[in-house]
Image 1 (cartoon, helix red, strand yellow):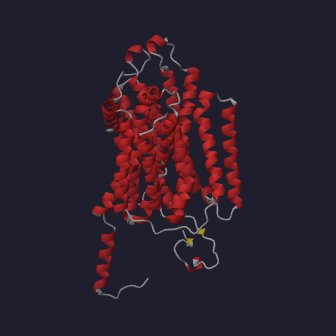
Image 2: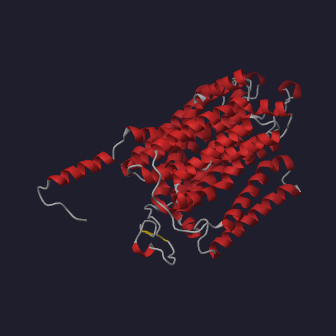
Image 3: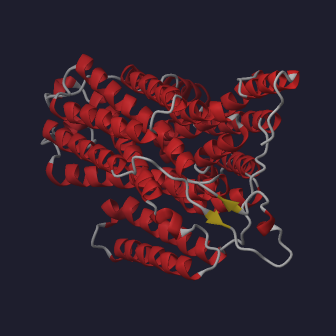
Length: 513
């Protein structure tokens, strides 16, 4: 580095220019807003589909409503590793916009679907919204000014909680006034607008990875994840010892093992196993999976708890309607955002995201444990939900900051895609475990005439389910504490090829800690 001579007026001007480059500009703010709203669309999709599911099932006369969520998660989880690798190779904004475009097409297919099979096809295509989560913070890492990155990625990932406030009202209005197809048209329009905003306000990353695409690895890993997810999702309905369930589960595990073996033998694998074996990466994605699992289970149990009529004498329930659940869900969303902003501010001041993740596990675990033992009071339930929401925000925002600290830009998207897989699989598995326990031991002894055919659970059943969520939060805490106190970024040499200038030190040749 060449220093300016004393008294050189250009030195001060250069410093002022650098300071200006680190500031929030209107374009940067709109860019972040468009990314946050895109991830809000990912969050609202779960709420809207859950609310519209009865109407959709009745219209198409089907009992396979679970596929509306399973197809979405399945394609998202399966596509994540391949999308992440392609993003590192060809540009993160390009892949982000491509995923948005496919999701728009999927929403359009669902909006006009003449049959339930076509509806599921549309939902499967819309599953490309799932990789948008890690693509967004990977892109922010590359194109936002360094000083703004911790706060920006924290707001982007934790801002997903704020949608819990208006979502029940928006969903109820659309379905009640315009029918279930209106939610798919809503996604078509909103995604098109947000995609255009991202194109206009967000730069493409200049970071590229020099590598070949491992198609065999992508096929093995994708098929393995698909098998495990299908087996877990439909195991309760098919039976855990049924041949179909075992075939999917065992086949999925075998394919994932085959991917691990092939990755060690291939010169340029889909995802570098050596990177995944690093404590800084392995425990980050594990903690992320448990935190998202806690979130999925807690938010699934909460509406069931508060919508149950108190008159049934089960020791819980407030008899609220779908819109009434917003009173309990809104504080979770608000506290999630608070937790995310807190991480962004503290990490920007050199706090360790490892400690933020650990604090998130403590807060979420405490909230779940307290809810397990006291869920018959509105005020206490809202207070405990706030603890869970705060923990979610701390955990959500810590994940990208940990990966940014541990992984070089050239491998950011492909490595973060594994975190995306964990963030999809854990929320699918944990509720299955909880509801298996509930259905086997805690069904309330009420007649179908009283419950109107619905399955209700005892108060001890909810205690057990919330303790399962608390246990997952403790696992998140242990994973966070297992992270290195000081994370060193991995060194990733890119193989040279004839005619390549990799050895000359071009970007992407070798990344040093």
